Length: 296
Image 1 (cartoon, rainbow, N blue to C red):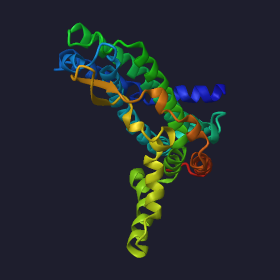
Image 2 (image 1 turned 45 degrees about the horizontal axis):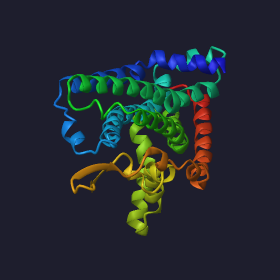
Image 3 (image 1 turned 30 degrees about the vertical axis):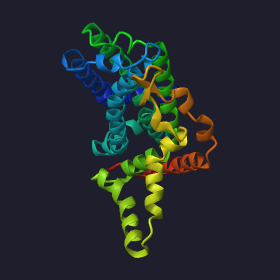
């Protein structure tokens, strides 16, 4: 465990983008909140006094989405590049001279992509969101009763933790595939990651006129929300126009995060654990490939 922790620290030292990228994105968002044309007053004026959390929840969630999206893209690239670059710069030979096994090396990179990068993104999103909320409030843009809602903050924390845990499990086969390609490919890792999946799909479509492979791939890539949340997950923090007792427009939240999370449905779903099994096999393949190959 100590060796694994030390290897993860090494990944943080060698891949400065893990912490630099959230800082840059967070700084840009803070600049937008400080000097941009953001005014929550009109939205807040439409809400009855007991429902200021609606607009605030949407705004806070929107702040986090930008960082979440950027760090997801970086995690994909990191998984594709991490084992390949070790062979390309021959640093794999140096690490093999140390009491570090290939299994520990691969697992440290997997943990960095699925745990460390999301945690760094989570921390950066929290700090950035607080800073943006403070900046908008100080500018007097109608945010004092909209953004500072304790219920919203608590829901966002729970939602982030749930997303990190469930996405790490659901996308384990994707991570395993990217690691295996990174350990095997001599060049053009992105091309090799896509072509073995794209070619069978095209052949099936042209020859058999079916799309089973495509459905399988799309289901794994985009099926996370339908498995981890209830069917009405698209209503999370959404705005719905309603009419109050005085026949004036108001804004109300259809659901809360507590109602949307479907942990039982996710963890009891066979597709979840089938993906875990495939992911474990692919990670084992990546470890074996790293053990056998030392050149890029």
